[in-house]
Image (cartoon, rainbow, N blue to C red; front, side, top):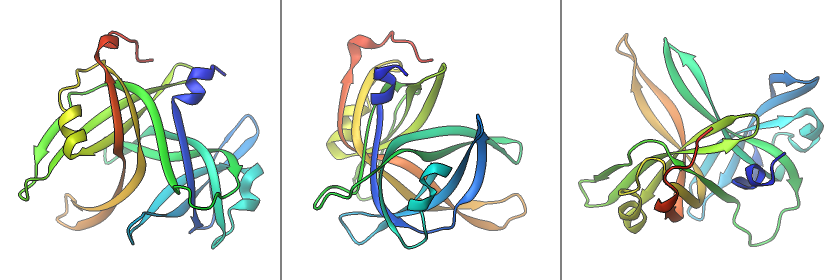
Length: 211
């Protein structure tokens, strides 16, 4: 596999297995399963993150067991109620040893801005910017990863042009939101995004190809 494509999307997570593995799919005779991982923040909050794991790693994913891993954040589209929904999960590539005092949730991506950033200010004057990043993957695929930046990073990202190459370091976070259904009922759903801690935009590379 292309070295650059292996290194433009890197995830490190360390957390506690929160669910039994559920069969997801099979590729070239290898079975893959989905599990939930509880990953602590520096605050008291815990992110509940979806992880896709090969059958060869399943022995590490017993409920209640701590596990550290390296992988990539992947995306795919799922049709729900005749609408396409972006689904995110962490694809496990390697099981690692847990390092003391290490950050349990790190993601580093290099990709391209694929939609105009959305900048806003909260009623409490907090600046926020949402941006969707396309990260190229092997076999002519791309992962589309939603990112959220705050404060100085938000002001920096808001002027990034579509097609600009961008490097982001941050963490994967989960958040719950309320969705009103057509029948009037309110459903609690979970969204996943990259919370940006460091960012660099290369505006000179705005003509790069997104595959």
